[in-house]
Image (cartoon, rainbow, N blue to C red; front, side):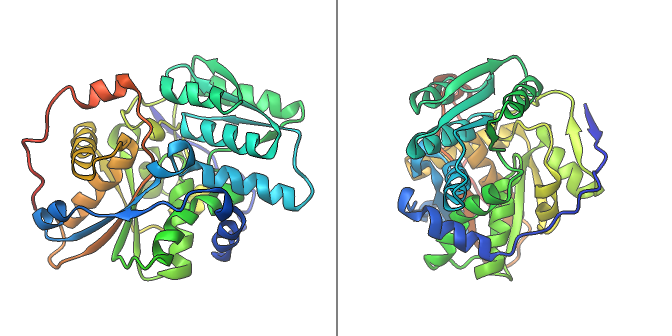
Length: 339
């Protein structure tokens, strides 16, 4: 069940889009410059040009390393690098914090709900973090706050200026590489990727529309967008798009999400449909959370009367065996995408 949250009296001081440029300067030597790819077959079927920024080829297999590294490298520049960091996560942020911490030689503790992907749990341990599992997302956030109170620096998955600026570098790279798009689509969990994407577009393509994709069964951000007040879930929504299993967005990301052109709420079946098709067409692992952005783009393209150019940010490619089985329990490849 969702409920509205009362806003605090803290004033949001928005970053300037140049923060994304600064973030890219800071992290570019430490990350992969991921490719932009397309499927000629898909473009012919749909009659539009769809380009994909593939963050599954990023370190840790997802865009999240961009934000985590930006936080720690910015602190290092300020001679304020902590001895220990702590984070809570539904998966990819955990790996990002673990790897970024190892790269800078500091201790990391990560708290995750026990239902998180086993692949993401094991990767987090392999990158050197101390991993603590809890029953619920609420317990994970509370445990992280306790460790923060003991002196660790909390790296929030989305409610941090440096996280947002770092995540925006994915879109920044695509635009810098010459991508011209009428619209850009990305998945919404905590809203950090979309907030950064909006800022990157303001820097290099201010006329481009930015749209969010969110699971219909985990639509707290979409509800917040439409009502003007932050909406929260009491329990973690168990969508197959595990990167979007957040309870609520923050006031910081809400400030940026309100600037978007709109939200698309995607049914679970459509998330699975596009996960199958993108894996098949692009010949790579695509997380359901990432494929959800294509599902949203498809909904938008069906309303367009002229040919459009679209950039879809594929946020990651980390999938465990259980999720693979769930994705492929029913074969959707006989249903060819058409408009």
